[in-house]
Length: 348
Image (tube, rainbow, N blue to C red; front, side):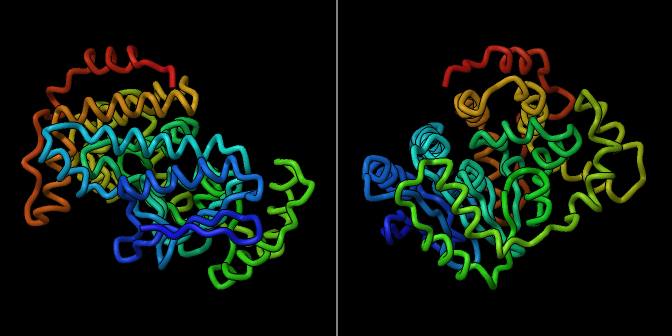
């Protein structure tokens, strides 16, 4: 589900499964990776544009396909995650500038593609989230690298509960560089494609692309997450232990606390605990190390079948609650989890 084209020395990749909010399949990932490899070597291509057809940029990986793969093979869908992470890394290290022009629903794997680009442009339609814990796994695609840099309450709230951000919040937290109006998107795209790349080095070209968008730049106000949720999250999510955090929520009668606690209790305790620890351990890993770690941690969770149960309940049967979980919050093996994180092989 993607269209690749060249226009005036620009390589354009447009995700094209609008009816599925451009969810990524393994074929998409392979196709995108192959074309990027070709364009990296092609002197006629000066930079790359990533965009999505329809209302969304990308809702993330096609998790139902991952579920089916696991049910058929009895295995962790390693090829999908490994190749998805390799693609994100390819975007991050690409020898030419990459611009992501994204909008609408941008979650999970969609965030992975946008956040690693050189110039990240979004608009007021953006609905940004890393909702993985709802499906029994953790924010991956090395997003933990960014989340671990955030103030603790924000990093934990956004990763544990999959909190949504609008375009203003995404700019504030560093997940986007420029905000525009959706009605200007076509004009912005034309302005970018009109940039004369001849004779410019990498940094010079990024500067020219930024300059082309500058006239359309919207000055963000304070987004709803930062205005309404962040101050409340700061009161509960500063705890150093998950048990303490949950006790604090439990002791409060505020609607925010009740809702946050219900959210945590509806998720896989193991996925919640691992996501909690990952915020702290993640502070010492580089972005490339985070990709390597993500693969190991996901394989561990998959082995415990937490994601399978959550995906089945939410997206396959869609009719009843997961028969969660092998682990309850009370019997989490914290020493074992600390040992798992401490032993993470960090060479990418």
